[in-house]
Length: 214
Image (cartoon, rainbow, N blue to C red; front, side, top):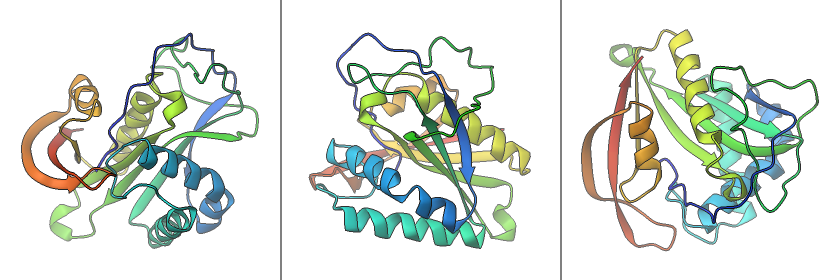
């Protein structure tokens, strides 16, 4: 399930100086970023996002997950993208709002801070080659409500379109603030399943499913 993007207290954002969205295309790429990938996954789970894990998520279990992701990348059935920045956090916030959403995200520097990730799973069945599934949209709790999720969604939609996919699907916890974001991004809500998954504390949660034609 996509994460429940819990809203942090309002603070004054600081502009992000150097940042980029890039694809990790090999197992080595994932292992190079492993500590940061584990950290963002642990942070999202431990603050309450429903993304398939119970809290507290250990570093060992986070490492196991990302190594499984690396194996799927090697098989060509999963695509992983990260948004990274060299800017430091001030008052726990970052900002992308000063940059038009139509402007490509790029950087001339080597990025160091992973602020967000997103994955695209392709369906190998010959009857499903037209579609793919968006999963594991993660945004660091210290960088929420700054346009990072929106930019990652736009990036993965464009990537999927470039591979010939014409439809995407995803799901999220029904009580997650992410629900409204997907609606604003013109995703079509097509159903809700009661008790579909669990929150990190083990209590059940409903899931809402979305689709989008590309």
